[in-house]
Length: 372
Image 1: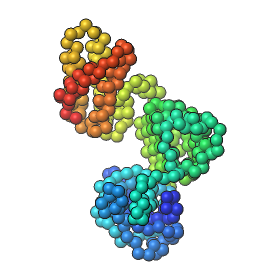
Image 2 (image 1 turned 120 degrees about the vertical axis):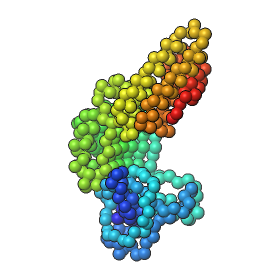
Image 3 (image 1 turned 90 degrees about the vertical axis):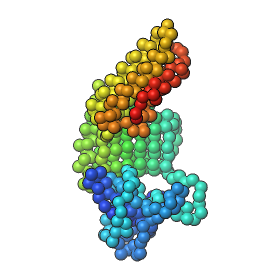
Image 4 (image 1 turned 180 degrees about the horizontal axis):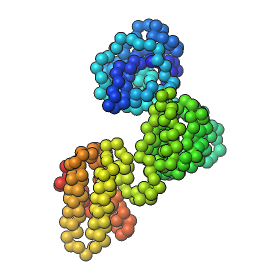
């Protein structure tokens, strides 16, 4: 198959080596070739697999598993004998052929300085808010925009300032997207990811007739009404080359109930069941209530011992939950300790004192018993 690469400013090619039905993935082997658009494999001449030696790569093939929906801008030009018969152990999302080839060629020319795409920008929601609220010319040079920490963002203004985006990633922590239908003005958009943002409804849905080249649509933790509208609009586009992944659609009640829950992202996470999420939240609330009671009673001489025991109970509670499904991995472990820290932070705000020793006692109690 062939695809145009912006970073190469040329066409490049790859070979699909295998399909994995269980993971709905396709093994993609990049080839060491670029040039004008090929009409068939005969236009390629002799080809070889792309070998990566740049940075920490150690002579391995550029071979990766991607979602098995072939992007609509990619063209099947024929077949060749397999250049690699062993499945790749690497998985990723978002077919962006040509990037590894471009980096490898820079490396081969002796250009070892860190490289970044001049057409790519990563900024916070506050930065975008400032940029779009001030007079300025459209940033047509920016093709890939990644916006994090969104608290409130006006999509009409964003589309006006960045009209030629091919990639847009927006993420927040229960932030608000205003005028989300304004994203329909981004006619060149190919990849859209929205995570942890709200304020959208069915009328804000992205429309295939407005964004005909969309190849990747990933939505997570967004309003249920908006999720339903986006599914109905874009699932029919899957056979034409749009990968659609919409998860953790949230009802308004869920948002209200979980606004102050530091474990809320567990709801809808692929490897965490709804039952586990419910029990985890119950354990968090139980621990928080016990902690607030213990810290509020300053007359307790044995308060450090009581905090240590609360930490042990917290650790034991999640040991029990994890023993059934083994869902606590590195990210979840960090989130459990962050939740403990948030509990102490809430107590500090309520009591008006610093509680560093309380954090230490809780953490020591957890570490004494945890099996995750």
